[in-house]
Amino acid sequence: MSAEQYRVGSPGGRVAKKRPLEVDVMLRRIEEILSGYTGAWQIRRRGDSDWSGARDRETSLARLADLTVRGDVGGAWQLRPVGTPGAVFVVRKVEVAPPVASPSAGTDPLKEIHLAYFERFPDHESWGIFNCRPIAGSSSWSQHAWGNAEDFSDGGVAAAEAQRWFNENTSRLPIAEVIGRGRIWTKASQGFRALSPSANQHHDHWHVSADPLGDGSPPCAP
Image (tube, rainbow, N blue to C red; front, side):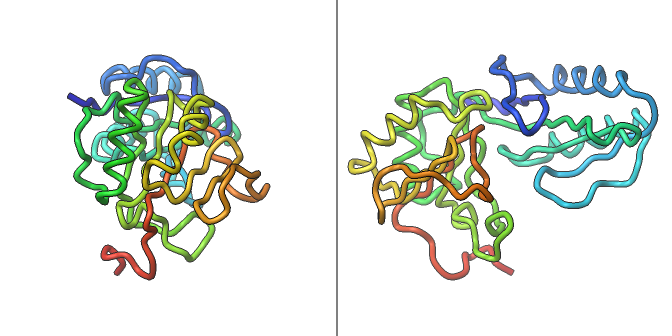
């Protein structure tokens, strides 16, 4: 069976490829981080612009535990000490070695990609499928909002061997778009090319959208 676990590290770089942590071990690791700094802490979901108000260490740990355990697979939360705002840590909820079974949150073409990917890379992680949101920094809807995209990671890394596998299978599988390692492949243009420097470079995971792409407004839109 699949297991929801956690990775703890510093954003902006690669999270060490260590065994993912069960919730109690993750919380002990966060408690160690909190104990390394004096004063209050702030928390936010990764990607949000605003931080929470300042909380003491005990309250911060309890709040983070609630957010991460209740949160969706693929979600990440940042925390930082108020006195040292540059020291930012991250917790990401992952699904380790999902079973070879169709994910209920995905479209049929995405299920086909999911099954093939984890047959080839059974030790990799799914960082989530459905997420009703626009693309970061854009007003356009993400394919995640249709359940038509999935994020794949090898312990916080967009694996090079996965890029080779995508190259070999884009004609066999219903893949419309692949983004990772600072590069993008689309069905329309073929071949990997460099992403715009201003775009999310996706060094820690592969974002894969299925064909056909969702268009217009997704069913989840308000």
